[in-house]
Length: 368
Image 1: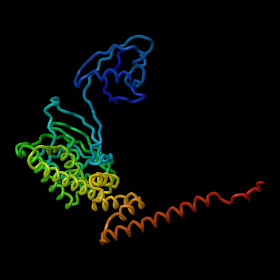
Image 2: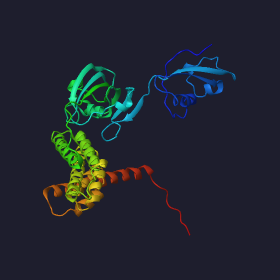
Image 3: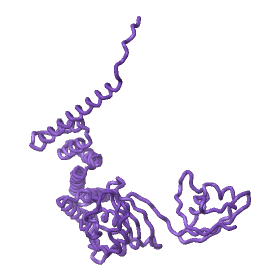
Image 4: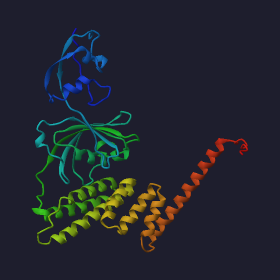
């Protein structure tokens, strides 16, 4: 009796998975049909029970007819890679080389196929969206989604933090706690209004400086996660401006790039502290302090991040290095000391409870 025709999903590299699929599917392309001649012993090894009939036994060989319908790739596409937005790519275009990512400022046309809350209640279906990328017109979930998609792609996005998905266009402005599940289709990216930057590193520097100003506006609007992400992108792209030697004005350009890098990292640290990503803020400040160990803003914002991590000793160490006695510095020092006192009190109470749980110890024995 031949096995029934059925659909099934497989994951590569699973320890207890169907080993045959790991071997066969890696040699196939999407949409390909093939026949596989396989021994019954290998066929049974790790196979899903619902796919095979009870007659698969003995040492006979079997022929499997396979069709690879789609690859489904799962990835973390949240701004800070904290798992708050997970993507499952469901359908992609065949012409991989011609795919186009949505750049900053581009007008995109997207369709929200379905939007459901954590309980499965549908909030929106087949809604047409049109917005510019990276300027804060839509919620952070849509911003992070569109940055990971290419024209024609359909994907599902699991958003664990409801605050990232509060969007009137999706009908999720009153989304309850627990997050949402979005199925999105990026229909097109409009490139007719593309602004061609002047050639050379001067042109790149001009474009990145304007993007820094746009990220600053996002911070002022309270879009801290999106602004931090934009500042990181600008910092990374500044690393490609390296034409300083043997050109007129090269030293001045190198200094300008260095200052712009530090400004982006410091602004990113400020946004991350506001958003509660304190470890990331420490990392951004560390990069600044590697370039300029006495940078006051870097020391101050790293001290704020250490306070958020309850590392009061490190925060006080940075505060002691800072010169002067400004009002902000005094307030931060007082906050650190109050927090340290609270942590010490909590630790003392915990230690007392632990000792109380031991009960009365017996009288110690006399030892010669």
